[in-house]
Amino acid sequence: MLLVYRYRVKSLNGLLNKQARAVNFVFNYCNDRQKDALRFDRKWLSGFDLNKLTTGSSKELGIHSGTINAVCEQYAKSRSQKKRPYLRYRGKRHLGWVPLKGRDLRETPAGFHFNGREFKVFKSRTLPAGATIKDGTNFSQDSRGNWFLNVCVDVPAAPARPIQSGIGIDLGLKDFATLSNGERIAAPGLYRGAEDALALAQRANKKRRVKAIQSQTANRRSDFLHKLSTRIVREFDLIAVGDVSAAGLARTNMAKSVLDAGWSCFRSQLAYKAVKHGAWFEEVNESFTTQTCSDCGAQPDSRPRGFAGLGIRRWVCSECGSLHDRDVNAAKNILSKLVSGSGHRTPAEGIPVL
Ligand SMILES: [Zn+2]
Image (cartoon, protein in one colour):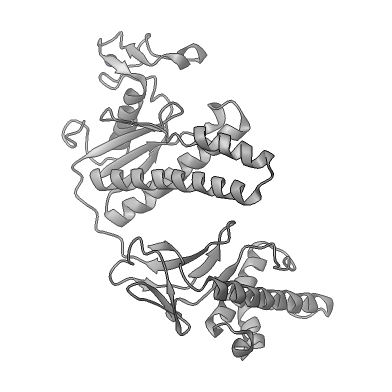
């Protein structure tokens, strides 16, 4: 499976800025040639054609020849993906981007070796042993002007673990997630302090400060999601998550998109981390999971339902008398839906958690 390892680059940022300008030059050259092809009614250029046209320009431009090839190929790919006759020119307002070929990058203890230089990075983790670096690797800049190295690596998927423990996850508004073992995970309280600071900075028209606060918030949110998804994938062999979307839940459009982004980000992290660690992950249709009793499987009269039931946090099943926490009950149902639906094991024999 392909994974991207992202590192903040410590050194040579000035060089990268310079190279990014050369990359834009190559990209715009490709765009010009494409426009020529249109004007003179010639065959549209493929990445291969563009590579031939740019051969030998590496020394003059001060960038690696692999970078030039990667730009040409990416240009042709983007153009056909976007189904456009030509693309917009890259300029100052674009965030810096320096692609490279995987074969030209080598890992060193403190960073990465590329094009005769060592780029030092904040090495939060090393590449997995035996991983091959693939094309698609690039340096890219964020809105604050910091450079990052995104290393594409091919990692062998772990063999599937025997299924000994399972967990159902109910994603929600009040708590970020509720697990079928009763654990609640609160949404990170990111906004209170940040919101005031952001408003202040926006009123004062301090653009750098605004960007800093926004990216801090984004970083904290992604840190939270990554830590949680990693922990769950390590702890449990079978993971079921409801397919909730915010469309019917949240009030304003703004809140909806933020919630949806968080949930789908979390689900996709679980999906790829599960493959990496040999766990089993599946998304489960959520309908009726709040309304069914997880003990007896009935949909009793006392269940929370309809608009009036939205505020009900705890309820007693009128069929079997068990007391339910709304979200934990939903999470349990999500897990048993996966267990019974996919024919892994029946709940009674297979999974001790149930
Ligand atoms: Zn019941």
